[in-house]
Image 1: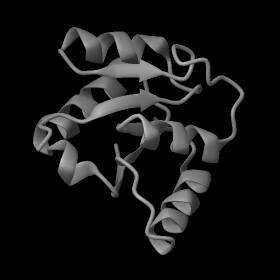
Image 2 (image 1 turned 90 degrees about the horizontal axis):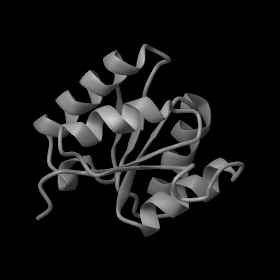
Image 3 (image 1 turned 180 degrees about the vertical axis):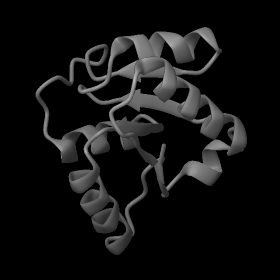
Length: 114
């Protein structure tokens, strides 16, 4: 069992959020870090899934649909977290609260809103 989820922040996220979470000891990478800028949403989720990472996005509509498609086709992902646009410190605080409350296994294959 993996205790903390590893995060993958899609390209719309501030790199400050990654830095704030890393400072708290969380494993975080970004689309920029991974050379994934400009890739489609399905490609972003597939990348995160293949690398054992929960994707964090602002894109509610597309990722709700992708989540449904994964469930219907019995495909596995490591979690999807959708965040409203807020100040980076607020988003980091909300993400840390979720990561401290749930294990990676509890986040896997689920959709959360922060």
